[in-house]
Amino acid sequence: MVSRQGRKSGHDFPAGLSQPAVRALLRAGYTQLDQLTRVREADLLKLHGMGPKGVRLLREALRASGKSFAKRAQMMSRK
Image (cartoon, rainbow, N blue to C red):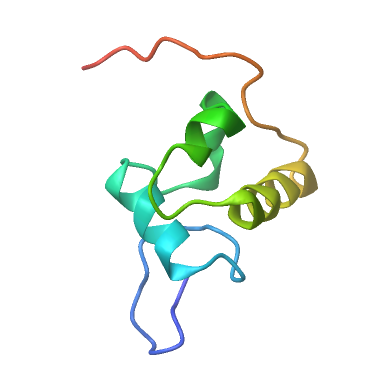
């Protein structure tokens, strides 16, 4: 995705997502919408900068691609 300034943004989050929400996701290590299928909405809301509107936009973007947030926390293996 290319930002308004023409620089590559490094993520594929919805265009309407606020910059504080994008920064919160990037700080948490998320760069792709698909990664959020392993995360619960409640966990995203704990991120500083992420609010209900941001979660709603992400939910809608996931739903548009036939996906959704995790229903419960999943263990992530570290490699």
